[in-house]
Length: 308
Ligand SMILES: Nc1nc2c(ncn2[C@@H]2O[C@H](COP(=O)(O)OP(=O)(O)O)[C@@H](O)[C@H]2O)c(=O)[nH]1
Ligand SMILES: [Mg+2]
Picture (spheres, rainbow, N blue to C red):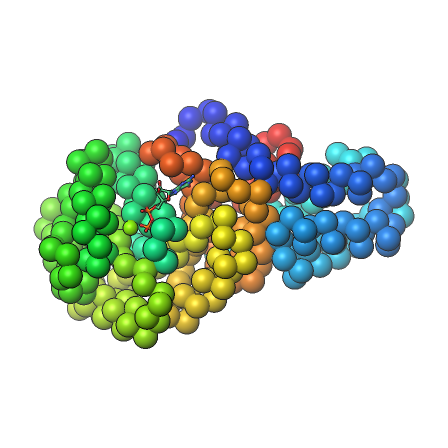
């Protein structure tokens, strides 16, 4: 995650495939001068085609219909109106509590295998270190030895303390140790990695419930965030995962990864509209700096190919 001036440029670059999909699929709408009923219907179809989902597409076109029916508009006008309506949807849910709200702030990171949980935790740890926050990482994916090793490497890179046990260890016990350690070492933030075996839904549900119960024994307000990671390249599957994990654990925020590798960035709009959950971060590459704090306005404008 970077706070450099080139932030928006990197967002634009990361979302290039998605903004090409959005602007490309509505290109014929952009050439029309009138936003009449027929054009608005075409626009609605185009937004659905750009992965925004029927509900969000209907909401957006309804708002446009109310604003400018039958008036002459330019392509740029339409882009701006679209960006405003997309921003409205993205900014709808309450934002997650800031990291300063608790000490240590406990963030439980969940999601199926391969979506980018461990990588995202590493990227956050790096951004935390840059901002002077002390961070502890819990290697709670005790199912896979590689996941434990991967988190240890991020710990070395970022100076974060890593609490790990051997493969196969009890994840709740590990979480207990990690929160105890984070309190003892004066951490500002504790990031807890987890296993993502959705094949065994009951097992996963029990494990996450136990982790949460154990954390609450130490701090009844924890976890302060349960962040679900989804992979943007999986499109509809990501939406299904959000529904499932909302049942399995009390998800409070989303992070959408791999937006750089897909034309389906519009799915972030569908996900927000459908889940009512705020997006905290977006992943726009594999590098340690390729994580951005989610900015609804910047995202909406980059998605339709506008400047900040
Ligand atoms: N292109 C791209 N790759 C990512 C991003 N986030 C994670 N990855 C890659 O996705 C793969 C799986 O990530 P990992 O963190 O191990 O997933 P986990 O199983 O959920 O912990 C790795 O190869 C990561 O480098 C992203 O934002 N963009
Ligand atoms: Mg992992």
